[in-house]
Image (cartoon, rainbow, N blue to C red):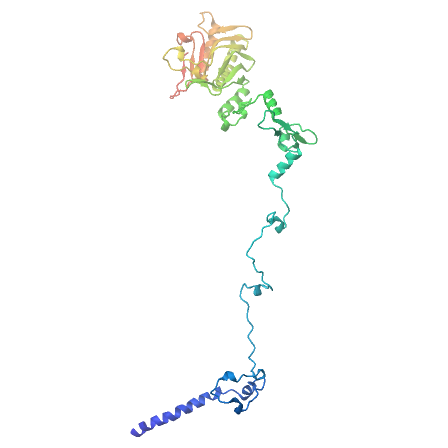
Length: 396
């Protein structure tokens, strides 16, 4: 064992160089490559005696041009990004550092190939200069003698002008009036300012615009079917206690019956009164007198007062146009029947008045007449007073 350990170091020193020599055998270039590497021109040889001492300055021994070795070809250089060479510009434009503006300015429209556009102010100035303005042109503003220059031009008539019924002058052209003509027209026709004109028929105006409610319109339709003669009158308003929102003037009933004088009441009491006359009064008069009704004389319709005109009393239904008083009935044969207490032998008159008075409770909520109190001794009082309990006060 001691002998082997002694031989290990000498063997290692021998084997390591051998291994390195074996591995480096492939690193020697082939002969063909070595032969290819040669100078392109032969370097002239000088005698060693001519070179002198090699320890001298090499600058004293210049190398001739024909003895220089050719350097290998340079690699092709790539242009820089965004450079003139990369963009294809042969000769880059050098900025002079001074920007020159043309005298007439920079015309961007011409540069973009856009034609000239005429502005509104320029067009109006041209029209005024040529006298073709669509509006009146006045000269001498601010002086004591202003005057109009030229005449307003004609403009094509629009569809709105045709709808308004304006008559065009010439071939479908509308003449623009000047201020003097407009002022004279307003003076002659009457100028309406700051309000909407009320329609002749309030039933045509929508309720959202302050028109008649649907219930009032329906009531008037029923009056027409009953043959009632009436007309709408302006609103009556005298404070919170008196007035009629949608009053009508009652002048006649079905069958040619006249109301004397015409009564101003609301539509609801008119409908109830017309039904009572048609269904009760006219049939009773024909049964007892073989004659129809010619006229009814009313004593009170709308009246802003208290009940029975007594101070401190509640407001009457007459103050709302919700009541009507009948004082006399005239038949077509000329017989006049006054509403009053009759004598013992006035059988037909008493029978007629009692009949129509009793039947009237089907149409009205309050019925008063002769015998009710001293305030109703000479007329019938009919109204549509609304009571919470639905009670009807019929004094027979």
